[in-house]
Image 1: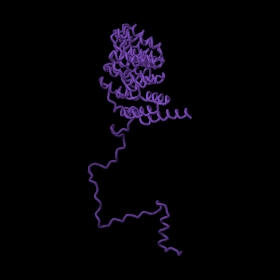
Image 2: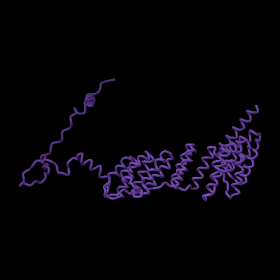
Image 3: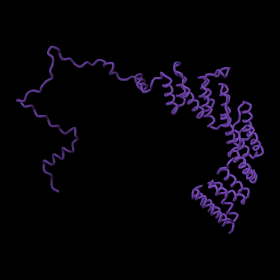
Image 4: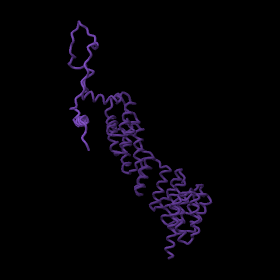
Length: 383
């Protein structure tokens, strides 16, 4: 290619220079005929002074560490009333229970701690820490007096603590709760003892359940229907069917008649112990006393009879369920279908499958899977 013209070469060279080296165009000189620019009006009596460079006004001082801390605390409402204290504790309890406890302990003497705020703190401490932590807070706010009847601890807060501990379901924590209530003049009721019993049921500890009953009666607390149902269920589950049956008469003497939960729990225990026919007789006794069985009762019997190889009686129970339009539970359905297939009653198993789908007792996938597994086992045994 040929050479560039001179002008183009100069512009290309200027474009390669740094920006700072490119000379800026000078402003055009003012025309002699143009009037001078207007100047700001000044007072000839006062000489011109330079701006004052001394300290700025107090309002313009840069914020110090103290002012910054005050600024951060301006968003928090000062605690002047019990409502302010309750709001602050509730806001802090979700994020930091220790901060919420500090607010309660450091509150001004003129601002009493509301009962519901103390209940909130005790519940959170019992749920996240232990009964001991709740007891420490109580001892600081309301020390236990020599006479429990003169305790200043609010009864509502103590009952809230009891409810939280019972919901936790730890038998050790519930046992530690009883002295705390006694120190402040609150006698544990049947609800607390029932929760302690259920905790022992979850731990499969029938001896502990009977110990709770003795302690309950020793403290002068009358067992209720829930107490007796828990006893019957736990003892029957542990195989102590004869002992469980004795409580049917005991509860009737106390004015608590066995209900469907009582009978069903006892039937389940009898089936586990291999006395499925005895459980079937208990069904007749139950109906004779005017207690109507429910779906759980029939499903318990159906599964128990199948496991005890009483398929003919199980079929009778199933027919009663169909006549009443009752739904089948998944374990009872699986056990019944498996027993029918193993006995060679495949057509009956398909009818049970159709009934389970029709009544929407279980999902189609579950119903089909259990039937298919039973048929696979049958084909394997025949091959």
